[in-house]
Amino acid sequence: MPGMTADTTAYEKQWFGHPRGLATLFFLEMWERYSYYGMRALLFLYMVGSTQRPGLGFDEAHAGSIYGWYTSMVYALGLVGGFVADRWLGHYRSVLFGGIIIAFGHFSMAVPHLNFFYLGLVLIVIGTGLLKPNASTLVGSLYKKDDPRRDAGFSIFYMGINFGAFFAPLITGWLGQKYNWHLGFAAAGVGMVIGVIQYMAGKKYLVPAEPEERAAELHPQEPAPPITRVEWMRISVIGILFLFTTIFWAGYEQAGTSLNLFADRATRLTLFGWTFPSSWFQSIAPLCVIIFAPVFAWLWLHLGKYDPSSPAKFTLGLIFLSLSYIFILQAAHIFESTHNRVSPMWLIFLYFLQTCGEICLYPTGMSMVTKLSPPRLVGFLMGIFFLSLAFGNKVAGWVAGFLTNLPFSQVFWIGFVSSGIAALILLTLIKPIRKLMGGVH
Image (cartoon, rainbow, N blue to C red; front, side, top):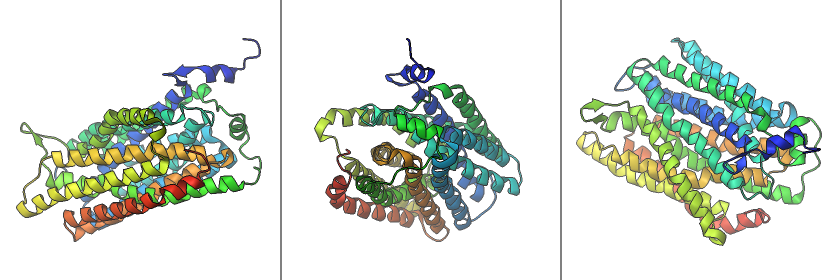
């Protein structure tokens, strides 16, 4: 058509009724999360040693400290990554450079030397800090502010996260626990390389929908106008929900630490006489997301005017998390009283409950940040949102260190009480928070 630009043509390309750029970001996030969760499934077990393969021989407290610092900094640097993208690099280049650095980090961990192990952790931290918040920001930029497809777009993007997280432990866990830890780490790096290649191939489809977002991407260093009173109110909502999101992740991220050890030490790992890697339990939660996220998306859509607000969905997330820990407490008591490994069904149902909580909270949070943030600060505030993951992971590693002196049941009790109290407090704050949101649902 006359007057149609290349950007306009690319933007009009569709993928399942969404901008074609969503496919590029879907597969980028799938492979990045494959690399992250594939390595994370092995990390704590590698440090303390698995019942199936010796590791570095660290005690739980030392391993928990390293795990907590690593996983927290992965998300904490998202704050820096968002700022760098907003001010200098732009979101596309930040994601590209981040993916390349992540791949180098995984390949460093494939070298069987402790110095390369620590170097790899540092590189993955830096790379993820650049990639993670800005990939989510790019998803939001594909839609106009009032586009009703925005939340659904984030749900699809969220599915990409879980496809990668599902099959990653099956591959890296098998290689790492059955053959060699470092083969598992190398497999994680291969996934990130694939993700970077397809991201570069799909660059032309990453066209922001709003003119001001296009300008911000092309000229990220230009000075921005002052923040208005309404914008400050909406930013405050991100800050309030940040606190409750931190508590959620502190419980949820026990999957990589205390729950990972419970799978390895206290859960039956045989099926028809065949022993499977304990890290395979890490695939249950993302599988549940793949199955049930469409159910929740359908539910939110068909509730219409009764669709819960963002703060209400956050509250539901904390309730599901608390229920999961009161459930697994029973399994811990059985193991501690009988010293017999328990049925895998205990962990399967726990991950189902936690998945319901994650579906309520995580995609809602990403979408909420892009809706409440001023365009010139969306990368930075997405970094703030991921900072809750940083604090949550640090607490998760710290709590897992209690297993040096405490039984599983007492550690799981902490998860039940903290998430339950947080859910009750947030329930009383839903109405005040909605007022601060200034009409944004």
